[in-house]
Amino acid sequence: MADDDELIRVLHAEHGDALFAHAVRLCDGDRQRAEDLVQETLVRAWRHPEALDPDRGSARAWLFTTARRLAIDAWRRREVRVGEVVTDAPPEPRTDLDEADRAVEAWTIAEALEKLSPAHREVLVECFYRGRSVAEAAAALGIPSGTVKSRTHYAVRALRLVLDEMGVTR
Image (cartoon, rainbow, N blue to C red; front, side, top):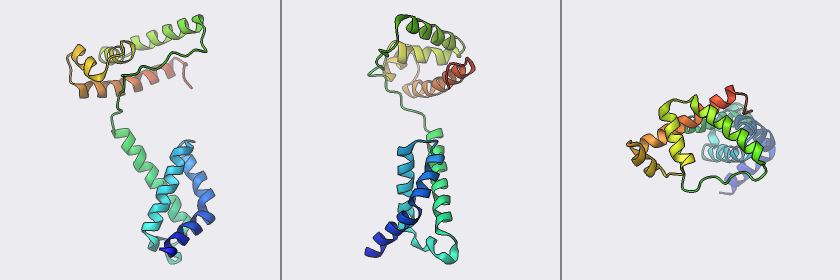
């Protein structure tokens, strides 16, 4: 057990900073996800110390490759998973906007919503503007709850694209 602890300490001392910098790039600047990625990479090294044998190649190369593979796996999991929609507590309105800013924002969102398909628009209106839960929106729209979740996920993505095209985001 002492050898295992020492292995992780040595790996972290020799490669920790470079591995973290690499992980931050892999996680698009998200430092929390990067820390998790470094931790999981070091756990993999601890579980498979034979992979770090100098005869098999550089330990840093193995760590970077493992981190990259873990990041890709995490990205794939996020992409195939339909996001959970929680509408029990609608977001609080921003307090730093004056009435004119709120009006412009409302008009912009209304214009963007008009560019969505009717199915996407109606699920967003039910969940976000009317503040209905997934079950309530499903009952109001006459569709299954899973369909509401899926449509909401894709509707938010479509809305983001429309807003990007309008030059509102990024």
